[in-house]
Image (cartoon, rainbow, N blue to C red; front, side, top):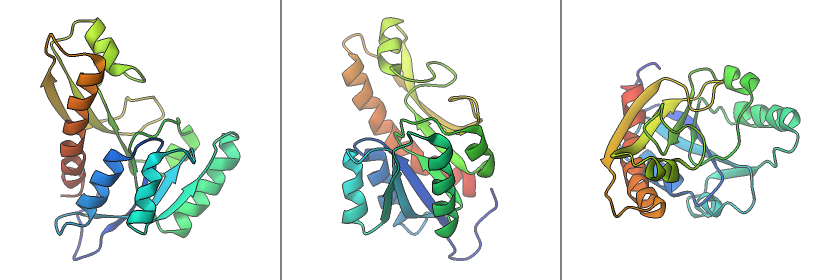
Length: 192
């Protein structure tokens, strides 16, 4: 990514499916002086995503797509992103897999936060797998999105120790706190 010039911020869309804690964190980050991004659009694949409330709270445009027909949905999504001059996409708990065609249209401009130390535990149930395998460490990873699931170039990781008393729920809470710390740092790293 190119360095920012002056006060121009990169128009960014955040894709969510759930509670939106990473979305809220990114919105707060985007409002700081050091942020290279502005959050201009929130996309969700479900009307039940609790994080959509932040669109109303912060007066950010939102759109919900059902993704039943991925080809049609992604065409509409692409048009919406271009209409809103979106140049960067952050996936934040987005539980749909984007097509290779869509990813190529935004090549190098889509990032994701994943709750494991990639390349370990791609996909779902990362915390329970780490606990079951008696791993000593887990963490989170910010990476570029490529056609292959959770396999893009790693931008930043944060490692945490797994305690013997940890459950998949307690580990998830600990890792989420770290996600909130490293997602903004990873964005700064990309644009500086």
